[in-house]
Length: 81
Image (cartoon, rainbow, N blue to C red):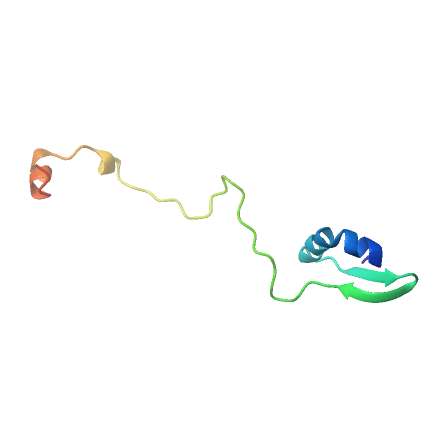
């Protein structure tokens, strides 16, 4: 457990909160006396986004003719001509 003074806690609160979000506990002391403890709240873990380039969904397979040009008959059937 990390220990900081009240002055350090005021000065570096954002940094300390990031550490707490990552699971660390921080004790705040006034002189030699502990006055508070920063601990993560259960069940509210910070959700992180995946890094750019990380594959997050299953692979999609398609047939080789999926991007082939439409035939004249298919164009007529779709009403595109």
